[in-house]
Length: 267
Ligand SMILES: O=C(O)CCC(=O)C(=O)O
Ligand SMILES: [Fe+2]
Image (cartoon, rainbow, N blue to C red):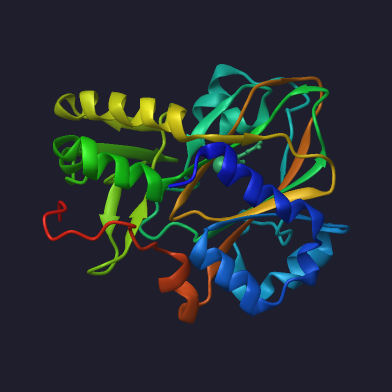
């Protein structure tokens, strides 16, 4: 396996190309092979139009705008706002690597984050490959993996709903999905706590981090990669597109194939 530095170097080569220069086949190929693409872009609307073949945009109630502005909120963020859905995204705080909308029965398959204005200090983006986490757990901590795949070990809150969200789940016989949050929306039962500590230390070990400049973005499978950011000072503006894949792409984009197949993996 390549080191995180090598992996980041390979992925960063993406910043030299405009997303609109990539064909549908190239995009789908890279999403299946890596699950994460870094790229350059000129215009927000152009990105939305180019990626329309992947699915429909997840929009907020009462809004027609597919973009979600991620910037510190003008009036600061009260503890109440932070405890609500996605609250900390609208502050200058760090966000631990997480999946978006993990509490939904079938979370949106793809996330796109576009940097409009980078922070003057901090604010690097953080990426964690769930495939690597799964492999490390299966190899070195199978008992922990087993606990985290049991229904009831992990709960996530979304609005007023609390749902069971196994950290890894089989979407088909051979393909998995990761759902993970370690923030104010996540709850763990007592036997899972040690396993969660293991995962959190693995996240630190394998995280890739990279500061995006204005006009740079990333596209990732929400079913495979976790994303986050470092804290920052001053202003920083990202736009987010969340994609619900078209029916014929749900399988490819909503799951990933583990690197090591073994008959004794937890089910
Ligand atoms: O600010 C960022 O870089 C990430 C924001 C994020 O994770 C989100 O809005 O879901
Ligand atoms: Fe997020």
